[in-house]
Amino acid sequence: MRVAVGLGRGPALRASAGLLVRPRGTAVVGLHAVAAAGLPVPGPPSDLVEAVARAPQRSGSWWPGSWRRSSPLPSALMALYAAYASNLHPDRMATRAPHSPLEATGWLRGWRLTFGGEERGWDGALATVVEVPEQADPAHPEVPPAQVFVAVYDLTDADAEELDRWEGADLGLYTKVKVRVDTLEGELLAWTYVLDDYEGGMPSAFYLGMLADAAEAAGAPDDYVAELRARPCRSVG
Image 1 (tube, helix red, strand yellow):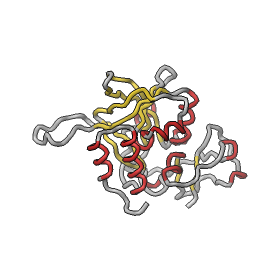
Image 2 (cartoon, one colour):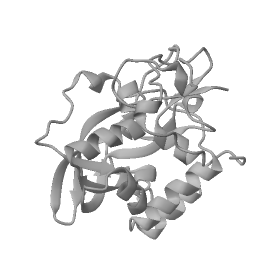
Image 3 (cartoon, helix red, strand yellow):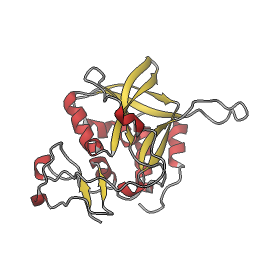
Image 4 (cartoon, one colour):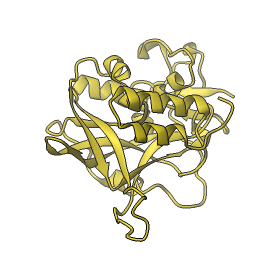
């Protein structure tokens, strides 16, 4: 299967890069999915093709993030980014946003980590977050409320643009939404990426292990990391 990797913001297509505009059945992914699959990341944007085709739509319900796309994207005055999934790993963020310091770690209360867009990843579903009502169930006090562990970075403009390339945001793979992060120092207003696709499918074992390793490296609680490692996944990949 040919995979069109989106890079840069220009509309030009360069056949010399050796990539094609996405034919039917071809996945459109961001560079984070390329790296997650253990494949070599392509070279500079000037030598590559930007894929402008979108995956074919299907019937069904869209992500809660879809209706948020009409909301304004975060301005320069709101540069705090709430990282989750593989971007929790400090080493990964040091590569993708080398000029942006870590501000804090905390929780997205009333959100849950899930997976979707299975046909758009290399070998399984991609991570995303979905907002859910935060309601404690008195009948089941052992069930924790929905929450996602995040690391908050103060992104520079340049690093924010680079991160958009990695996440495929300029191709519409992920969209940006505003979130509130509960930290030890108080509540922070930030933005994060939400997959603009259907929920469903399972991540590969490799990808899920990478997410758990990233959460552990970021200082997530042991029970949170253990829950990640215990999630259903594809046995191959």
